[in-house]
Length: 196
Length: 216
Image 1 (cartoon, rainbow over the protein chains, first blue to last red):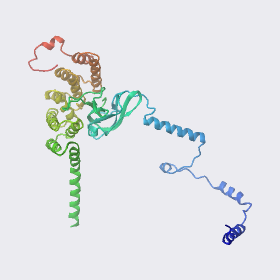
Image 2 (image 1 turned 180 degrees about the vertical axis):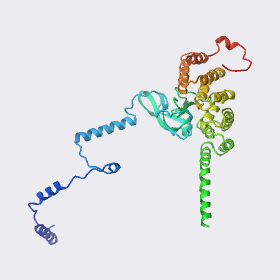
Image 3 (image 1 turned 90 degrees about the vertical axis):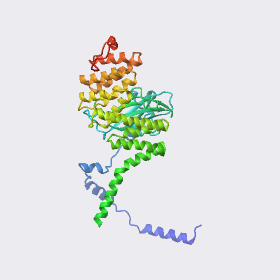
Image 4 (image 1 turned 45 degrees about the vertical axis):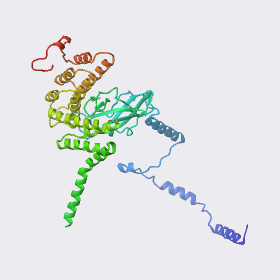
């Protein structure tokens, strides 16, 4: 196990350590003095400050609190703790002023349907190419199924598809005339002053 | 020589950019409807485009039919009827109308609203959007309010300067009243009167139409 080659290696390592100069007794003091003399880096002001990393200290309690707050926020956004919402579809980001319709504008619209016995619900309309798999809704509080999506300003037709086969108009929205396919659609007008 | 090549490249790129949306639209129709039906729909859409009508609602109608698994003949017929209604709506509402107004106007015409009602609404609100009144009149008819009563209500709303927001609220209340058991006519008359509209009394419904055929 301990071959002459190993012993030679051991000897050379030991000698190397013996040759290493000992720590200067004043070194620690000098290092502390140098650190004390070094000015603290200044936090850059203005926009540059936004793009530079800043070291900061945080206590374990504050760290855990911040982590818990982030987790709660995530659950809230994910719908786990979503507050009760009225089961009515409506634009979420307010209304644009004026009566004219600018078809280029996008507005976030929240669709909602109360369907306690549904296992899946999708909102389908001209804004998603009437694709039944494009916009699945998530179950929120009080059996309300919710989906929010950006929609261009204008008049849009839509319906809900429950469990992949049952088409329902939105009970809280205006009806469109019979669509030629034997089923009723709802209408939402987006981006016009005071609408819905 | 180099300039010519560059010009040709730019022209080619512009042509591709100009036709890309139409090609994508056609590809989507083919994917959802099959080549034959998509071809028929594309002809109607191209014809509407040539007449400067907005075509989004036509493509949407075809996709809607596909999603609802309607037969091809029904889809083609529905798209054709919608294209005709768009043309009538533009004639009644004017060339300056927005595509949302034309789509709403076509919806109202398909619900049974005469083009004359659309023209009267435009005359009363030449600058403001007519989307909401047109959506409301179509909704009222879908809820079994007689067309003459529904048209009279939105024309009066325009004449009285009722805001779109209030008109929509009234529509919502009419819907609630109908659900509660009121007849559609009684519901719209009650809610309309609350906004200052006047409707002929119940006995007036049996009177002969006025010589000029006007609505209140």
